Amino acid sequence: MNIRELSLGSLVIVEIDGIEHGPCEVVKLNTDTLTVLWDDNLLCAKHDKVNGLPITGDILRHIGFIESNERAWKLVYYFGDMRLYWKYDKRKHYSTFKFQPDFTQKRWTRIECAYIHSLQNIIRFLTGGELEFFYKSGKEKEHE
Image 1: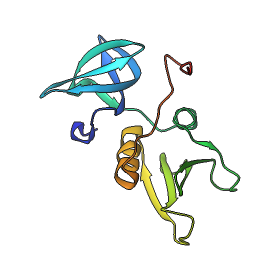
Image 2 (image 1 turned 120 degrees about the vertical axis):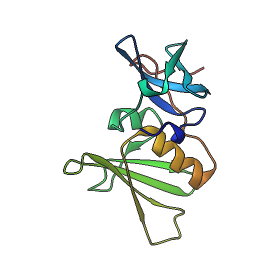
Image 3 (image 1 turned 135 degrees about the horizontal axis):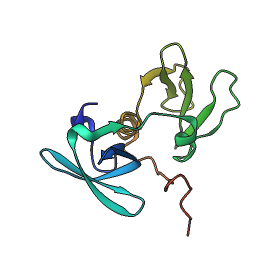
């Protein structure tokens, strides 16, 4: 994973003392370390101990994806008029997304990525918005 792909709010996995913690949210980036929020605790990890958070259906559901009614695509995410569909390509071991910038366009664009932080960067680039993430130690955060 290229550490330069990360920004504040990126979701990653960090390894500290041989134990993986994740998903963690990046809250501070330094020259050779970063600070993450995990289970309401701040953890500091060296760059070589940071890994991407693999994209899975479970993780996508925690950021607002819902079941899709389109046959070949398992989940869909709506951001304004944009639709973003997801499926996992078992042959390539990669997640594939297709999106339409809005409902008036007939062309779909396909994107392949393996990690949530890459998807976060794509959403940020396409919409200027952020994915909201509800996840805490394997349980959904309580909404107020």
